Image 1 (cartoon, rainbow, N blue to C red):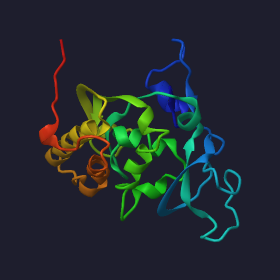
Image 2: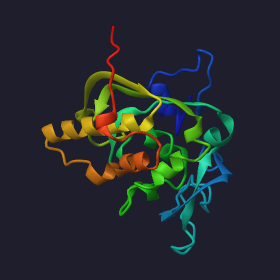
Image 3: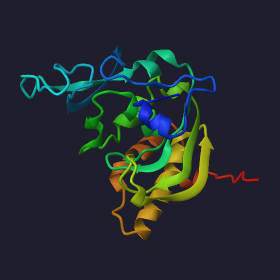
Image 4: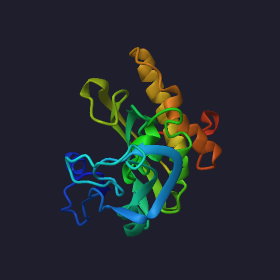
Length: 229
């Protein structure tokens, strides 16, 4: 079981005492220099990114061009250590990417120099599906289980109790796009009722992923089965 940091894992109730390992992605050294994701968007490098030059708390004396990169690196965990992935996103929005769902959860938190995928004009619409389609990620995902026991419709993925409420729902599927499509519809409904601006283009990566063939983004072709006892 891993996450960007151990704090979130432990807060979620994982202890590692049940026979599994708890891991986080260490700054810089936690990324594989050979597992590269390129995209035509420059990102400003910060401490923790693999190619960042400088120490924590120090600003390197580099030009604006030298301190940017169009390259991201996959975490060593996802690139080298795991062969199968059970993807466990939370039902939450993302202020940068619309929905912090299945596609988001195994891509953005598992790369460095990720901030460039949450800014205009793309907001990760093409990049998130491309990263998910990397053999180190998409081919390893065997199940997606979205935790909607406590859902959050705004301010995510960081915890914002004022926008969260009990939803008592789990979504399970091998299709990450289908779950994200359902999640996006649900989030938009909640935001409309509470007069929060719609997600719209921030969640465009879900539709693009469907067009890429990564799953089904057509609501009319998605069946939800209630398996409660």
